[in-house]
Amino acid sequence: MLCADLVSAGLSDVEMLLEYQLPLTSKRADVVLVGQHPRTGGPSYLVVELKQWSHAERFEESDTLVRIEQYGDRPVTHPALQVRDYCDYMLGFTAVLADAPLSLAGVAYLHNATDSDVADLFRIPGDRLGSVFTGQRRSEFQDFLRSRFAEGRSGASYADALSVNLG
Image (cartoon, rainbow, N blue to C red; front, side, top):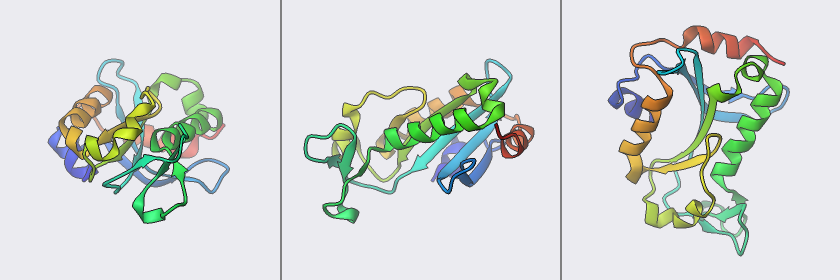
């Protein structure tokens, strides 16, 4: 689905780093998209946490935990907070990002969900390092991708820099 969204947005040259291992830990981000920023001309990095969830709700009265059917009564971290944590970690341990922190953003993409089925997730306001998009907001997500990546510009050199430039 993410590949199709990139193509539909005219961004087929954006690099995709799948199961990107965060520096000095066993944690992995589902995807890091890498390309050239359309306004700055510099690097642009987007951590994407892909969720196949079709339904999610707040866990008890928590603002940070959610319940999804697949895990029964075991709560999981709100996906915007999960991706925000990945971004914060990358900013702390990746030298290329330390020099350009605004080049990094993060999203959770629930491509199988509608807004009403995950309404509780929108209780936490999104920001540059952690926001939520659903399948219902696919065109909005593609607009967001276009705001982060320039059409027809390869991100290969930036992807190489991210892969080898640890802090």
